[in-house]
Length: 417
Ligand SMILES: Cc1cc2nc3c(=O)[nH]c(=O)nc-3n(C[C@H](O)[C@H](O)[C@H](O)COP(=O)(O)OP(=O)(O)OC[C@H]3O[C@@H](n4cnc5c(N)ncnc54)[C@H](O)[C@@H]3O)c2cc1C
Image (cartoon, rainbow, N blue to C red; front, side):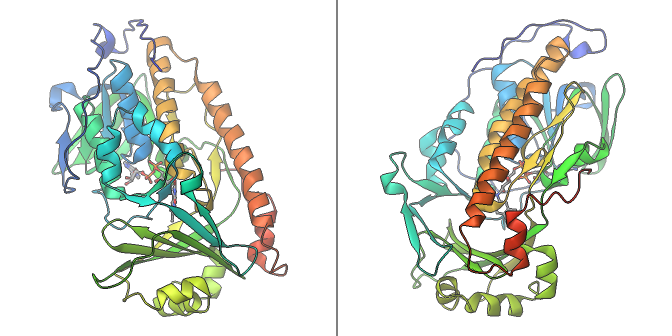
């Protein structure tokens, strides 16, 4: 897809007073994963060039995809502000082969990309019965999926954005995002405080959804699910699990996935109140709960003590984004999903690309794509809720369980952020 670049100079945006050349095509990405560290990548942003067409808050997959789309297909000036260095302990996402066309669109070489992650050949699930049902990627005609090394994945996307000319400030904490004829984004970057100016802002800050909250954008949230993860490092002599495994209990479901580098993630997904009642933030209680299961328990028994233990919010929600404002949101900031759907990374990339196009239309033509984007997010979320309900309805063994009953309801708990 090529975004037409029609320019209408406007006095409020001096960055657009002279046409800029289209960005060069993406170069193949052959470097290995980088150590995370403070950086200012892309063209150097001195005090004189703190003016941007688009500032993106958050450098996860959504933020990087938005930046790459803008730099690859338009001449707009883009900065990404990321408040953290990347954490080596991330959820351990599994993605289907449907992700690959998105990676191609972003101009990232497929071969180098796949090498950095672990092939995912099969899923096994005891969901609706004790027996494991195995789905093998071998027979789906699309090839295998991947267990992502998130640090490598995020670094690779960000590197591509930097190569294409996006200015990357990391770690840089946004202190205030102030509306006006243009946005002013005050950031603390290392020892310095800087004021960036932008015609348009894209919120890609994940579930933190900084702009969605600040702008009091209405949000539909359907549940209060949380996931508690234990990360293990297997010894060289230990056999590795080669597929993802899901197993339900009366109070939620366990998930086990191999990660690149001999690591394994095991998680329990439940509701926030059940987590507290069962005291599952206590690693010992969590382990007891895991050992009580048939399939997951057999594997956890063989694993060494976990290296890290993390809690994540995993509730589902969608923001009713404005159609014609000078900001939008993408990725988890716009809509987030139950991990059982494996939708998150693909949605982050595709909505990041879409938000990039919305931003481009706003900067160049004063709008035009915001309403379509907003509606597509709402439609996508509605379809997801229906699919999720039918998936959870397949588990009928605990009709009295609050967790399973709630999954069958639409569960509209609140409608404002
Ligand atoms: C437990 C769990 C399991 C999951 N499993 C899967 C799976 O198997 N498959 C799948 O496809 N998806 C899965 N997901 C979903 C997936 O992780 C997310 O959908 C995806 O990471 C969203 O990308 P994002 O770029 O929108 O947000 P994020 O990846 O969260 O990135 C947001 C970035 O914004 C930064 N940030 C936050 N606030 C600010 C601020 N104020 N200013 C600047 N920067 C800020 C953060 O530091 C972060 O780097 C899972 C999620 C969880 C929690």
